[in-house]
Image (cartoon, rainbow, N blue to C red; front, side):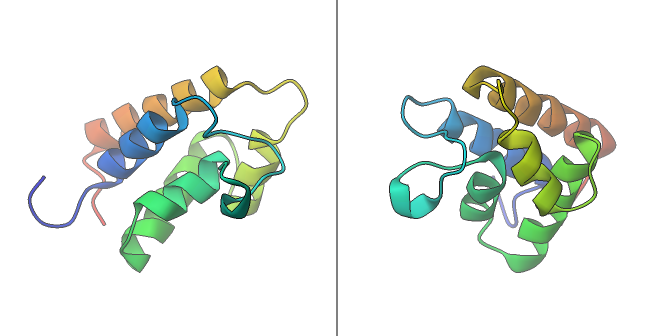
Length: 102
């Protein structure tokens, strides 16, 4: 990965991290050692522009408009870690296909 990572790379890294046991949670935050999809995207994307573009891309992918929609989606009753990781990977594939850059 040379230079600034792409949106696809951020989403893929977020999926990789959230796939590990104990990393994903609902109604949680980084201070509890767990992350939702949005807080992990925020953590992975160190550049502000890349962070916002990645968060918005994922929110749109799940039918939302902002990171607040991602929180609601992540925290929906019955949502699983596997679903969240799969949706992040799906979004990464789409971003890669569309060649979305920061």
